[in-house]
Image (tube, rainbow, N blue to C red; front, side, top):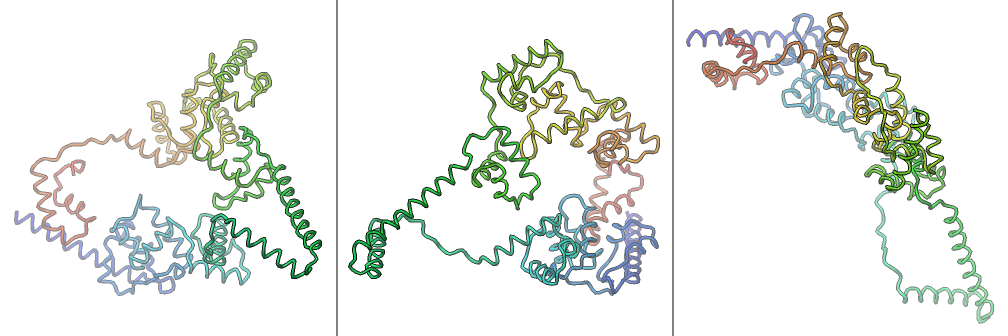
Length: 490
């Protein structure tokens, strides 16, 4: 036991020396102009990973002053871009230890790094950002240059929309309190009496002129009501068909969700602004009801008749014979005899049909409208389950069968990188998913329980060093103290 304690003390001393060495090299690599250390040079000199160097860095031994950037406008564009790239290496939300590594890398205190990180994941317009952008606009700077100076939002258009909304909010000020109560009869009579008194003051006792003025006023009111009713009559108030809904979604798609020009869209559709906005909200929340049973029977009968005669489908003829649109016919058809199977094979699969299906979905079911895979199956004349699986594959959701895994192992054996394997298997498959599946297939994880003796030794090491070492250094210390134990068990 004494020998084991001596070994632990020796390892702890070596760790302290390495921490002091890392801190010394970081101080030597400090760049006063950028305000942070050149960690690439430190990594090259020590031949250690960057995260391990940052974990060994001891701020209490460093002579470099830590920067304080409490406001976002204090951050330079290069610093913010570097922060965004660095935090992408951490999966999920940053822990306390992750924030310490980010603070050491940026040479900024943890609270200010946390503020900038929150701005990365939830961009928002603040008063300081608005004033800075307003000063840039006064100087005549274009929006693209402003976006490069303030790389917070996702795009230039999003930046402009956030600026416009905040400007309108500031310029409008607090809304005045208004009363929505109905006018009483006494208030209406008082208004008419004041109007009559004003006419008497103008025409005197000439009641003929007073009566003509009142009649002219009433005639003008009738003309205004007639104009309003005529204008309302030109607005299309008919039932929304599936084509109207598709056209509405097509017109809304190019706009940012927070900056939709409803006036232009309503003019193109010939409908009221509130009607277009309300219908768009409905399409986002719920699916369109199914067609009536008699329509479904009529469509299925027409499809069966045409398929029996020609062994192929012409949905334009079906639409003409039934009196519905092609999309409604595709959604209502229940006849499916003779539909082909669509089985994915990485060696023989062709993406021509997949691209055709993708084009059909984007044209008829743009977001946020949910996809009707019955219509997709009828259009492709392929089984619905196969269409759904292929759509999942196009989204990057791969089903790792034996044939797919064998193909991935074969391509990896040829020296191909994971990202190239992902592109060959599916257009939207990521390299991380291929790497994970490959490692799970070639090196399956075996869970072996720890023995009682190993557990007792681990508890003793944790009790001895938990208060002296950071949490991230305990696993490596335990592995070094138990060289004979299986690493898979640890």
